[in-house]
Length: 235
Image (tube, rainbow, N blue to C red; front, side, top):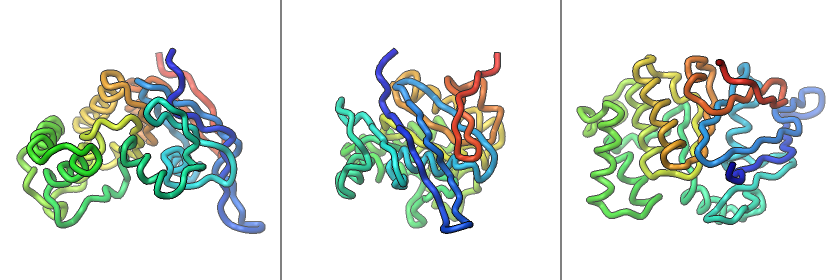
């Protein structure tokens, strides 16, 4: 097995003060490997989104380390300066957020094009071709000229997923990627994420309540009361 591409070591994160203080992460340890699609489940409020944000460089833990592969070198994400961390995320990571985070003034195609040109440095023609190919795979080709206000929730979710996948990130972090989708489209999305892991060697962490995803993943973790455990996959 290859070395871990990302390691979370003794991660602690708490919220609140005094008697209202709550531990979201309690000495959590987790390793992500290239080519793996990892599913993180647990009840609402258990710390799943917190762990995703800490591992992806968006939320600093109270203590612990996040070591990530950056061009073949393991770097401590939370020892980087804010500018270095932003550059690391731009080069290496893709994000799928529950709230879509789409640009209101851009069409579906432009949402992907801007990420390809800014995140991957490709030319306009290549960015447009790759954007069209990804939108077609997601069943969105007829909607590529529409802006977010003209799209349904499920269509916006698929645009957000396509944007994250388009630049072939080494790490991809997805927070409830199938929550706004019927299962036909949800299955298509999970298969795309699995292909990105298995065929392109990405390390992908999916946070979800959707048990239908389980047959498609390589590793299953459960987080509850801030404590992480690995669970067996269904036979």
